[in-house]
Amino acid sequence: MKYKKQSGQAMIILVFVSAIITSLILQTSAFSLSSLSLDNEYSQGLILLNRAEGHLENAALRSLRDPTFAGETINEDNISCTTQVSDITGGKDINSFCQQNQRSRMVGLTVTFSSGTYQFSPIEER
Image (tube, rainbow, N blue to C red; front, side):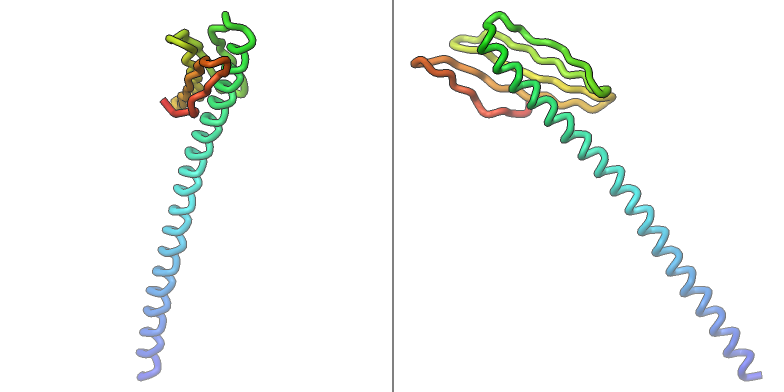
Protein backbone atom coordinates (compact mmCIF):
# COMPACT_ATOMS: atom_id res chain seq x y z
CA MET A 1 0.00 0.00 0.00
CA LYS A 2 2.83 2.34 0.72
CA TYR A 3 4.02 2.16 -2.89
CA LYS A 4 0.61 2.99 -4.38
CA LYS A 5 0.37 6.18 -2.31
CA GLN A 6 3.82 7.32 -3.49
CA SER A 7 2.91 6.43 -7.07
CA GLY A 8 -0.11 8.74 -6.88
CA GLN A 9 2.00 11.57 -5.47
CA ALA A 10 4.50 11.18 -8.30
CA MET A 11 1.66 11.37 -10.83
CA ILE A 12 0.33 14.59 -9.25
CA ILE A 13 3.81 16.14 -9.30
CA LEU A 14 4.21 15.12 -12.96
CA VAL A 15 0.87 16.75 -13.86
CA PHE A 16 1.83 20.00 -12.09
CA VAL A 17 5.28 20.11 -13.71
CA SER A 18 3.71 19.46 -17.12
CA ALA A 19 1.17 22.24 -16.55
CA ILE A 20 3.92 24.71 -15.58
CA ILE A 21 6.05 23.80 -18.60
CA THR A 22 3.04 24.10 -20.94
CA SER A 23 2.17 27.48 -19.42
CA LEU A 24 5.72 28.74 -19.95
CA ILE A 25 5.76 27.57 -23.56
CA LEU A 26 2.44 29.31 -24.28
CA GLN A 27 3.60 32.55 -22.65
CA THR A 28 6.84 32.49 -24.63
CA SER A 29 4.92 31.90 -27.86
CA ALA A 30 2.52 34.76 -27.13
CA PHE A 31 5.43 37.08 -26.32
CA SER A 32 7.21 36.10 -29.55
CA LEU A 33 4.11 36.80 -31.64
CA SER A 34 3.60 40.22 -30.06
CA SER A 35 7.29 41.02 -30.63
CA LEU A 36 6.93 40.11 -34.29
CA SER A 37 3.99 42.48 -34.58
CA LEU A 38 6.00 45.31 -33.00
CA ASP A 39 8.97 44.56 -35.27
CA ASN A 40 6.66 44.81 -38.28
CA GLU A 41 5.32 48.19 -37.11
CA TYR A 42 8.85 49.46 -36.56
CA SER A 43 10.11 48.25 -39.94
CA GLN A 44 7.10 49.74 -41.75
CA GLY A 45 7.82 53.08 -40.06
CA LEU A 46 11.45 52.92 -41.20
CA ILE A 47 10.38 52.12 -44.76
CA LEU A 48 8.10 55.18 -44.77
CA LEU A 49 10.85 57.35 -43.29
CA ASN A 50 13.37 56.20 -45.91
CA ARG A 51 10.88 56.83 -48.72
CA ALA A 52 10.07 60.29 -47.37
CA GLU A 53 13.79 61.17 -47.16
CA GLY A 54 14.39 59.87 -50.70
CA HIS A 55 11.55 61.93 -52.14
CA LEU A 56 12.76 64.94 -50.15
CA GLU A 57 16.27 64.70 -51.62
CA ASN A 58 14.81 64.24 -55.11
CA ALA A 59 12.62 67.32 -54.67
CA ALA A 60 15.61 69.35 -53.46
CA LEU A 61 17.62 68.45 -56.56
CA ARG A 62 14.68 69.07 -58.89
CA SER A 63 14.02 72.48 -57.34
CA LEU A 64 17.66 73.43 -57.95
CA ARG A 65 17.43 72.39 -61.62
CA ASP A 66 13.96 73.85 -62.15
CA PRO A 67 13.13 76.85 -59.91
CA THR A 68 9.42 76.53 -60.84
CA PHE A 69 9.15 72.98 -59.43
CA ALA A 70 6.47 73.08 -56.72
CA GLY A 71 6.21 69.42 -55.78
CA GLU A 72 4.49 66.21 -56.82
CA THR A 73 2.62 63.16 -55.57
CA ILE A 74 3.90 59.68 -56.32
CA ASN A 75 1.99 56.48 -55.58
CA GLU A 76 3.93 53.22 -55.57
CA ASP A 77 3.74 49.95 -53.65
CA ASN A 78 0.63 51.07 -51.73
CA ILE A 79 2.57 54.09 -50.41
CA SER A 80 1.62 57.64 -51.33
CA CYS A 81 4.35 60.30 -51.10
CA THR A 82 3.76 64.01 -51.60
CA THR A 83 6.52 66.62 -51.81
CA GLN A 84 5.88 70.34 -51.52
CA VAL A 85 8.36 73.09 -52.32
CA SER A 86 7.60 76.54 -50.88
CA ASP A 87 9.50 79.76 -51.48
CA ILE A 88 10.87 81.43 -48.37
CA THR A 89 13.10 84.46 -47.95
CA GLY A 90 16.48 83.55 -49.40
CA GLY A 91 15.61 80.02 -50.44
CA LYS A 92 13.10 77.19 -50.38
CA ASP A 93 11.40 75.07 -47.74
CA ILE A 94 10.81 71.48 -48.85
CA ASN A 95 8.53 68.93 -47.17
CA SER A 96 7.96 65.28 -48.00
CA PHE A 97 5.00 63.35 -46.59
CA CYS A 98 4.62 59.58 -47.09
CA GLN A 99 1.58 57.56 -46.00
CA GLN A 100 0.64 53.89 -46.02
CA ASN A 101 -2.75 53.03 -44.52
CA GLN A 102 -2.80 54.75 -41.08
CA ARG A 103 0.99 55.17 -40.86
CA SER A 104 2.67 58.36 -42.05
CA ARG A 105 6.02 60.13 -41.81
CA MET A 106 6.94 63.70 -42.72
CA VAL A 107 10.41 65.14 -43.18
CA GLY A 108 11.68 68.48 -44.38
CA LEU A 109 14.66 70.69 -45.03
CA THR A 110 15.47 74.24 -46.02
CA VAL A 111 17.67 75.27 -48.95
CA THR A 112 19.18 78.75 -48.88
CA PHE A 113 21.38 80.51 -51.40
CA SER A 114 24.05 82.88 -50.17
CA SER A 115 27.47 83.96 -51.37
CA GLY A 116 27.06 81.92 -54.53
CA THR A 117 26.46 78.58 -52.80
CA TYR A 118 23.46 76.54 -51.73
CA GLN A 119 23.20 75.63 -48.07
CA PHE A 120 21.08 72.61 -47.09
CA SER A 121 19.77 72.33 -43.56
CA PRO A 122 19.84 68.88 -41.96
CA ILE A 123 16.86 66.68 -42.76
CA GLU A 124 14.47 66.74 -39.84
CA GLU A 125 11.26 64.94 -39.04
CA ARG A 126 8.32 67.34 -38.92
